[in-house]
Image (cartoon, rainbow, N blue to C red; front, side, top):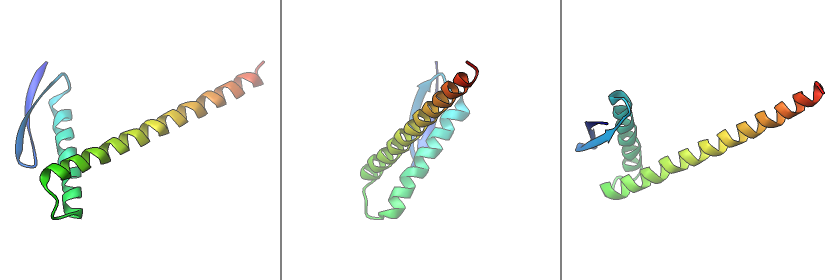
Length: 88
């Protein structure tokens, strides 16, 4: 397990993990961009609140994508069953 120093909104963080450095840097860049989006939409917001709202937005994205993935998997399963019945 390695560690990598990344910067998020000018703050240095040490991230430890097995993921490639490029991937971890992409994550840090993504988080920074999402926090900046929130900050730009609400200029008087504190950095902590911006980070929390960005985290909620990212969690929303994750849950929407998981639901979409689940729906796609169900659709594939239903179609597979239907196709299998055609060959019976």
